[in-house]
Length: 203
Image (cartoon, rainbow, N blue to C red):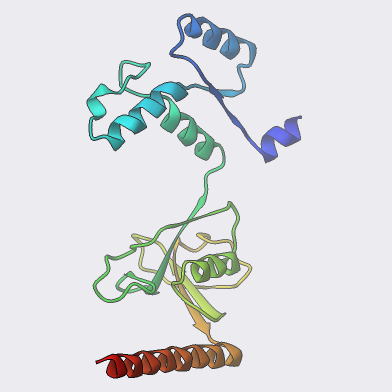
């Protein structure tokens, strides 16, 4: 049980705290399980809040607590805090902190990817490819801190953020990737040519 709790920590949502008498049950649960993360939640209030926001009338939403909270954000925050993700900022230039794959006009460090704890540089490269920010195989990677300019070379199996969360990934497209892209462009050009021919005929 201790291994499971350490490997897969759980935040427990105590729902229906908007029901009369629920406070007593929350106190009893906390007394019985002092080592567990127990967060009071009102799912009904959260649904009402979402519906009110959708209809642009958020003032009509109920809440179970004086600060207007429904507990949903609290329990999500508690769950993330139990196993904090690894943050990574893919960059195309570690000197200017330009965002990778976003063009010259994008804000610095535009993208922040949330990765599993102990994710490696190779894991980050795969996540960046899924986001469409780069393509090809990883060739070289460098990292630095957000506020520290020192740059260090990192390896594929290095843990992300060990040398800094800002990472520059250099990739190389394989030959088959270049051929596939060229074939796709040729097919798209052919479709455009056929469409122009049809428009001339109908004109």
